[in-house]
Image (cartoon, rainbow, N blue to C red; front, side, top):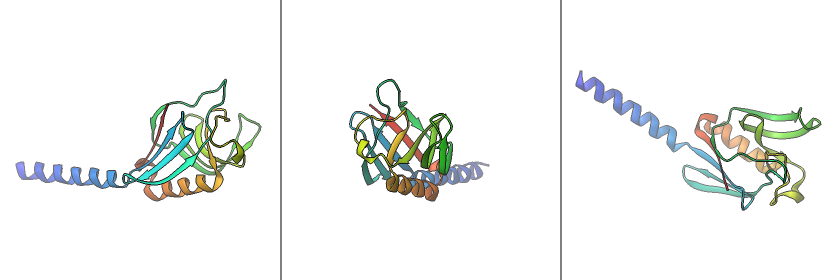
Length: 140
């Protein structure tokens, strides 16, 4: 009985550590308007972003993606295109934008905007590791 319990615990622990080894983190720093992408604790990318402009907000906290779309159109904001969308909290998403001149400063309605090429990289990495192994972390 004890041997079975030890074996079950070992399997659970090894499964957990394997899952953690694949962790992908997209950390958004609102004060710096940057995103740092880490896989397995190693920095892969650091990109400029645009988050909520005055009158809007980008939520802070940690989430796993709830859904992903290669192309999404905002029903709330005039069917604006949101390529490579990774939704993480209600209607909030990380997505690509063509308004690259705004990157590095607040300009959105609350979503996290990236250069579309970078949004695609993050989208592909998230699909590679699985949404359950990806975290969106947003801090001030």
